[in-house]
Length: 186
Image (cartoon, rainbow, N blue to C red; front, side, top):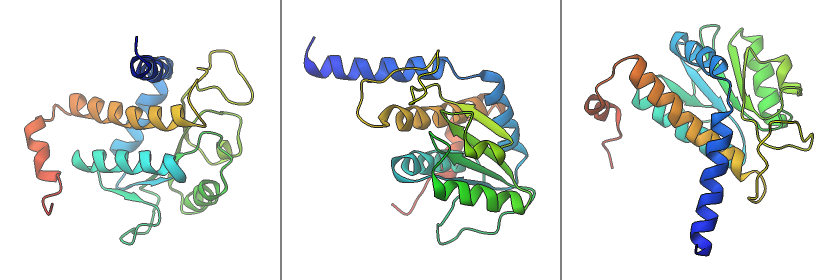
């Protein structure tokens, strides 16, 4: 195999192994929260934020009212809304501050991360664990050969598309109809 084939197989195998070990009951709880929320907000930093922005856009294509914390048109969060936090460690300061603030307004909070025993757990109503190797080296974690936290960001993005496909199936959405939500000023 060429270097390219080895690298892409390593990456896709790691993502597959990670997503295959996500608790499906937790995913169902997250979908319930998304479906009952008036608005769904997303917060993260760095490359995690980029993955979350993609998820927000995909859910918007499905008719979900989504907002990324900090965007210029972000409305107020209420007790009818959901905040989805992306933070592998669950210790990143900005998402922690935003989650705490969301709870002050009685919003629901879902955390997608790798570490269930983290500071974010005190604010989370739902936790989705992407079982990726952390410093704790917990059994069942996927060890990555990729640099930095690439596997978390990649798995988060594909997890978001998995949620979207589940919603399409659950709501029996005609795929062609989704084009009405796609950007048309491009």
